[in-house]
Length: 266
Image (cartoon, rainbow, N blue to C red; front, side, top):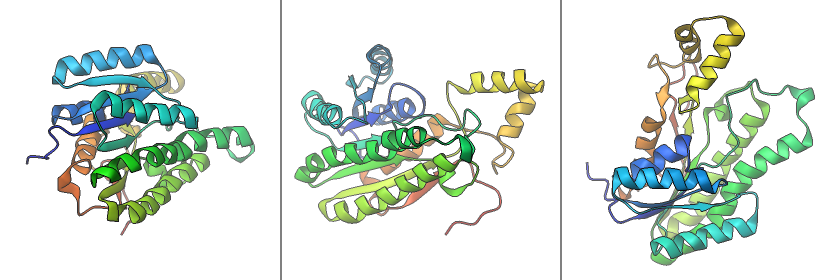
């Protein structure tokens, strides 16, 4: 299937590593020129150079702190200047989840909660607020918010709240922006294999004394396909949602954790 993405222009926050980088790579392989944005310029430069070599597309690394309005305004303006416009925004910049034991009630401080939500929820809102007028002026756009399956599970109070909030943000934006040609969707990855996964497994091996294979088996115990989903597989889904082919999907949540046992979502 031709995703009709050739020549589109994208901004991917959290794009220097992990799921964000995998998304930037897949979009570029589909013919998209991409700005990857994160806080570390050296990491951005290295990732941009590698992705450009692999894909042959224009890849630019720009710094952003999604907690800061001025920084968000600057990265959107910088994207438009570098690429000549902006068609696709992928919000993937967030504090990592699922790598450490979530804090219990007594351990959740105001600072911990608001810092997390400010980066992910307000950060996504800030990015959309700046990007939407650029897309609306052209009558077409896609905004994809990377959230997570903690939106549908207990076990991480802050994680659940921030991810449910991203889903609510997505639906509100979709209703407002849909008539302007901008579709907004949210993607819920589960535990996903990224470049950090070997380190997570090694730490759990050291703590438990279990074999690495057993640790990974337990990490995927509730996944119906029987293994962890790879970040490239999440990126495939996002590439479709970023394309004109996805016009029938707006405001909805797409789970991409390999299938969670038990619960029915409808």
